[in-house]
Image 1 (cartoon, one colour):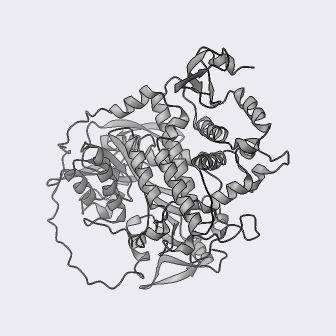
Image 2: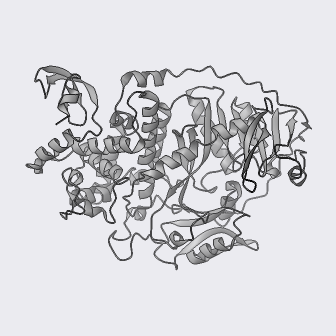
Length: 592
């Protein structure tokens, strides 16, 4: 959207009609909301006809005066409430044809009893042979990253990019080596960024980056980046807003699930792929709960490994099923993806945006445990103590009931506020004690806490941990196609997953996330650099990287070569230096 005059389609009702609002009107409406009453976010969706060829066109120059603005016909922003099940439904009403009202299915009434839950799930006994195999391979950071961006994925992107350039009458001739250089620069931009990406290649001493400049020429990078493509425009699904990146999503989901650690506990939630255009919403006061970008449904392990993801398209393109809202339907899809590895008693944790008694019942029938906070109107009229009455009782007080037919428990607990939580697998006992901090009295006291709340607090934060890791060093280079920022998000997610595997596989030589990303970026830029035009620069690059003490790993090689230090035959080499070196010579070779 080039300016405040760009029109936005919003999910806010005026009487019984939806109206189109200007960008500033949307932002002013959000600012007028009382912060304690509701939490809203700006949700960007691709255009309805995202498969159209016009969406591939750039809308301006990165260094131009207007900045990275996109026209209003390319992106649509929606104001949606925190309850994902209703906000997008309203938003799409104006686009859906008139439908006959269907009679609501009358469900038998729920019978609630004051007792603890009696779950009938089997205990978790599954082992993970794939993780043991990864540990035995002792993969380097690059090897772990290439579990996701494997040779098949790299060749696929190369072919689609060359195809798209050919359709534009450009003979690009992209190779896998050049694509890895581009990926290396994108990864490096997460921890070294400039106001303009061309500054990497400038000769000025304050900005020149020889690792980037020696790897690929500036104009070649710009040409490749402008034609980067992930689908055949002649075979796009017009009903899919993310058709331009759907093949990449399918491939990454397959690789993420293939190499995911097999665990009992998983988290499900919403993530945001931020859009970095120059928009008015970037000037909102600090602390305002507004986020700008694509909403992505994510299923992760409790540590933050991304197992499955799906960008949200609203209810027009993603139909809820089984009487659930959109969020609940996404939880079921995540569970279906998990069960491709076996119908095991997984335990899924999510927050009140997704939880309902109906969802708990569906997951129980699938043999999956689930626990989550729940809104009062989704408890199927469970007769618990009134929140006002519970607030007058001492902290740690709680009330609970169990659905006799479904064996689902709903508990209301009073701490600093009243919390409703629902589960089909965990009950009240064994109740424990937790520390409660009183801000006014500046003291700590122990209060009673039901078992399902304690387990929920321990295991629910997987999506938040993933978001935190991605936000630290996320890819800064953005193009002006609507899916450009989404590609950076996928790269960041793959690096996060590779690092999570590194933490589980390498107990002796662990590195932090920054060192991990630096290693991958350096190896990709040094190992895939275009040496045909470097001249004497390659010798300088080799000498500097040999002694930098950053990211040197010894790996096995099939063909024996001479050791760079003692010159005898060896079957190991340094992955970064690409030189044969014995394990006994490894340290001496890298010290001046």
